[in-house]
Amino acid sequence: MTTFKSKSEISTQTNKDSFERPDGRKIDEIRPMKAKVGIIPNADGSAMFSFGDTIAIAAVYGPRKMHPQHSQDPEKGTLRCNYNMLSFSVTDRIRPGPSRRSTEISKITEWALEPILMIDKFNSMVIDVHIHIIQANASTRCAGINAAALALAHAGIPMRDMVSSVSIGKLDKQLVVDVNKDEEDWEEGEGATDIPITLTSNGEITHIQLDGKITSKELKDAIELAKKATKQIYELQKKTLKEMKE
Amino acid sequence: METPRLTGERIRQYLEQGKRFDGRDLNEFRDLKIETGISKNAEGSVRVILGKTEVLVGIKMGVTAPYPDSPDKGNLMVTSELLPLSSERFESGPPKFPAIELGRVIDRFIRESKFIELEKLCIKEGEKVWEIFIDIYSINSDGNLMDAAGIGAIVALKHAKMPKYDEKEEKIIRGEWTDKKIPLKKEIPISVTVHKIGNSFIVDPIQEEEDISETRVTVGGHDETIHSLQKGDHKSLKIEEFHKMLDLAEETRASILDKIGKYLK
Image (tube, rainbow over all chains, first blue to last red; front, top):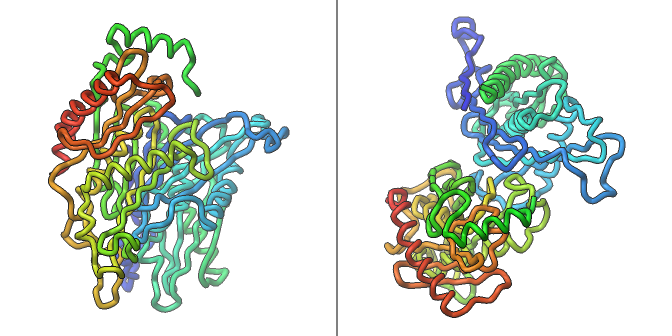
C-alpha cells in the first residue's frame, strides 16, 4: 500500500488568524491518503483509494463484448461506470441497490474518466468500472474517481493522461481542501459550499460540480487550490502504479 | 468464464484419488483471514478472506415497529449482493437467484440458531423494537461465498456495538455507540456447505469445483445440533450419502470454530 501525508505549503506564520478546521488540518491539507492496486484477483484491474476515513474500491472488467448487441457502439468503445455505497458505509443505513444519487454519480464518474481513455479502437466493446464505497466520510465520489482511474491504469487500458479528483469546500468564507463530513455539514456564516473537481495532470477539468454559494472570483481560487491538491494525488497515483510494477 | 469441461473432468479424476487441485484434503478449508472493524460507521463490520474469496459483512441497527406475530421481539433482516465488482459472472440489476438464496440461507442460519436473543431487543412491546440488518457483499468470488458469509455474519454480530438511543426523543443518535453488545447466545453456530462431486464429498470448493458440484447441503448448527439445512442443486442423494455429508459438516463445524475462536472474544 502506498500512503501519502499532505504537507501544507502555508506556513503558520503568514496565517496568524488562520481558520480552524474541525479536525485541525491546514486549509490546503488533504487527509492522509492510501492507495493500492490489484486488490481484487478476479478483475482485470482493481484499486483502493482513501482520503482519511473515506474508503473507495474499484474494479475494471473489460474491454469485453457489449451485451445486448443493440447497445454496441460500432464507432468506439463504451465506458460504463457504476458507483455504489455499501449499506453500512454511512451512519444511517442506506437501502442496498441503486438510487437517484448513485445513478447520477455513476454518470458523472464516466464523464470524469472518459476524456483520458483511448477507447476509440475498442468498437462494440464495453469497459465496466465498478466503484464501491466501503466507509464514507464525505468526498466519496472523488475517492471513487481516484480509485477508478488507478484501476483503469492497472487494467492496462490505454490512457492519454491520469485524472485526480478532490473536493474543495468553502466553509463560511474560507476555502479548504478535501472536505470531510463535519465540514460538509458546516452551518456557520455562509454555510458550506462543496465543489468536487477532477483534473487531468495537464490541468484540464474533466468534472466539476458545485453546491452552495460562491462568487466567481472565489470559484477561480478554488480551482487553483484543486490544481495544487490534485498534483499531490497524482504523485501518489503514479507512485502506487510504479510500486505495483516492481 | 464458465469452467471448461476438460477442467471439470480432471477435477473429478483427481478427486477419485482423493486429491484436489490445490493440494488440500477433501475436508480442508482454505486459509481463513478475518479483519474486523473495516467500516467505522457500521455497528459491526468484517472482511472475510477465504483463499481468494472475499466478502464484507456489515451490521446496522435501527428502531422500528415489531412484526405483528412477534410484538416483543427484535427484527432481523439479512440481505446479500453479489457485486459485479467481484466476478465477471455477476451482472448489475435486480438480485438474481444466487444472491437471494445466499441471503435467505444465512438469514435462516442466524434466525433458527437463536444466536441473537431477539426477545432482549424489545424496547416497548407492540410498538418499538430494535432491528438488525446484516448486509453481505461479495468482493472477490472464488467459490464458497456461502460459508464465508456465514462466518462473516457471526463475527460481525460478535463485534457489533449497540448504537446510542435517545429514550425521550425515541430515536437513535447516529454516529454514537454504547459499550453494549448485541445480546447473543454463548453457543456459536457455524454454517458449513458440503458438496458432492462424483463419489467424493468436499468442503470449501474453489470456483471450478463449485461449478461441477452435483449437489450441496448447507448445514447450520452448533456441536451436534442442527438448526438449519438446505440442499441445493438438482442431483439426488442416497440416504447413506446424506449421512456422510452431515458427518462431514459436523466435523468441519468444529474445525471452523477452532479457527475463528480468536475473533470471537
